[in-house]
Image 1 (cartoon, rainbow, N blue to C red):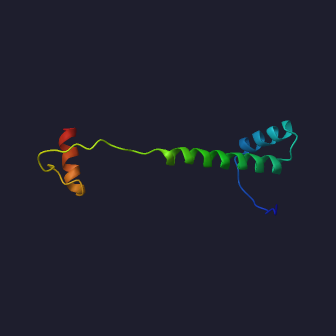
Image 2: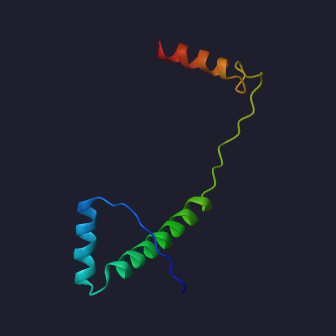
Image 3: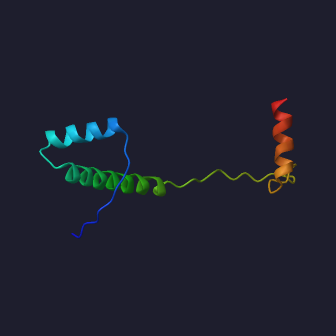
Length: 86
C-alpha cells in the first residue's frame, strides 16, 4: 500500500497515551495510529449502516377538518409554540 506523509497536531496527553499503547502492542507509533484509524473508520461505517436501516413510520390519522395551522409557515408554527409556552 502506498503511504503518504502527513503532519497533525494532537494534544500532548493524547500523544503520551498513543505512545504507551503502541509500546504495549509492540508497534511503531505510525503503525499503531494507522491501525487505530482503520478500526475507527470500520466502526463508523458499521454504525452508519445501522442508522440508515431504521425507518420512521408515523401513524396517519384522517381527520374530519382542515388543520388549524399551516405547517409550511414558520411564523404560524412559532405562534403555536409561543401560545403553548405561556
